[in-house]
Length: 425
Image (cartoon, rainbow, N blue to C red):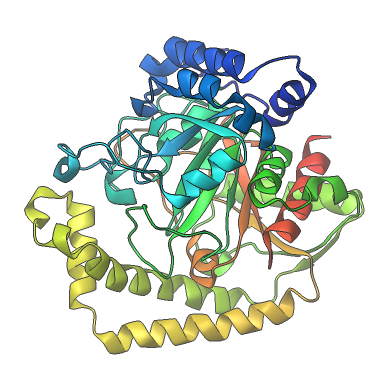
């Protein structure tokens, strides 16, 4: 491993198997997590706070932890999500003096019930928008980890935890996964309560989860929901609509070449891969997304808008733009998205999934920006689940992530696991 990289993801599937068999214990897993954090955090900078009582809590509630399907897996929690006993500071000076949350957000409660043990809060960009935090990309420390769930993605990519949760309003989960070289799942909008989460846009905000690979994310989703693990059924070559996002003029040459290479490999493995037929429609949805986001953010974060002089220029600009957006523009954007959702739904009766680039290219060099979320905007507006699939790299060794979109989490995960196995097998 070079001095510029600390990427060493921890397999969730292997840990859960060891926990279930008794080859390891939740306490041992927590010790491993703490040791890894201690050895890498100075370089990665993924965390803002730790739950010093996590090990004691695990010991006190060992029976409860073991009843969850994950069996005691250490987990990171993005710092816009309430975790009892720790402050929710949202990467903002406006929350610098926030006291500890009195209770877990419902999404954290759900993960605890699944057997996860939150060990602390991970870095977020300011109120989950564009102003970067201190986190660095484990794949190359001189490159951005993306945003806004930067800390969660980096904590998983560096092996500090095998599981972490984030949120997505534009590209806040998918892009960091693609940049850091791990897998992620963005859940359907409204799948779980967003109470206890400092969101930006009620119709767009959705939960996300990170793990080392698509099969790991599939296992995590099954544990969270109680549904069968889709990875167990990922044996049939899927029918794929290949989205190249050409009308958006955002995809780099190296990403375009990687997508073409993936198409050839998947076809060779037996997948049906057709050209995605709704490129123009998705471009329209992409343009509608920031209208919806800005309009709703100005109202969701109205208290922060009143203190805009203490916000970063990008966030202040978003809120001011939203405040100036006519309601008629917002309603028009919502109607366009609703109509597109119906049309895409019809397409997904003919295909198992859509496959396309998860980000325009590899993580940009530098830490003063988080990259472009444009390739996640349309799917987030449509409220569809998206799985980031790692495995591809550019000539410099930086990750190039793909994304799989489908009508349900199970369908997206099945296709993503098959794609991952085919690309890496």
